[in-house]
Amino acid sequence: MADNNILVLGTCRTLSMAQALTTGLPRATAIALDVASTPALESQIASHSLVISLVPYVFHASIIKLAIKHKVNVVTASYVSDAIGELDAAAKEAGIVVLNEVGVDPGIDHLYAIKTIGEVHAKGGPDNPLGFKFSWSPRGALLSQFNSAQFLSGGKKVEISNKDLMGVAKPYYVLDGYDFVAYPNRNSLPFQSFYAIPEADTVIRGSLRYKGNPAFVKALIDLGWLDTQSKDWLKMGITWAEVLQKATGAEDSGESALVSRVKELCHFPNEAESERILSGLR
Image (cartoon, rainbow, N blue to C red; front, top):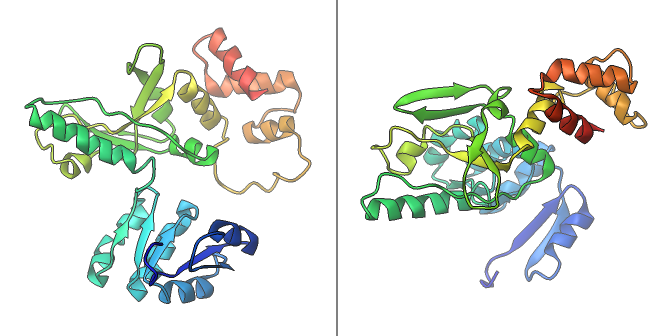
């Protein structure tokens, strides 16, 4: 914004939010724009030289397709999804830059990974632990724990389904006083090349959570809470107990029936874990 030749257009679904985002910024204007309205979205993309997309990740691929069509650069803070990855060749052919994963996580984690690996290489060492810091919306955090994973272990490719991911979380020591567990984060296979470590026969890009978190999220997965499909029965006025009954297929919304169904679906390892998670669901 220090360059007087740069003009910024802030957009949001509601004009008031767009105005709030641009208040106090010189040479910035605000408009209401529905990202689901392709004609309006395309018109604005075509008239600018850079798009910074902070909308929900499901819209990024559509935005990038329009940017490729009009040769406009794009920046997002989201992961490179399969849908975005499929646009790589088209973006290169269009001669534009599509820069993703430049937030806190993903983003800063890459910088520290490269920094740490570079330091290890400089010292002639084969390995070094990676540190991560997380900053997520609740929905984004939960859905990030419902992804499948691929990684390299002992030179062999390992694949884990999204439903099983939380079940493989293991204790991971970081510092005294912190009780973390770790699990593989999405597809780690490209990072052997990205980080220039062909000598590594084990490459796992991981996420850290406090002990107990993956087990609770696994219960939510087993109970159907992370199913993103639309639910006709999910309407205003429905009670928490009724939601749990519908999601799990319990006989009724009474506590006894719900507890019985939760235990049936989740297969808790012991009574203490059962009570801990049931308490959270209440």
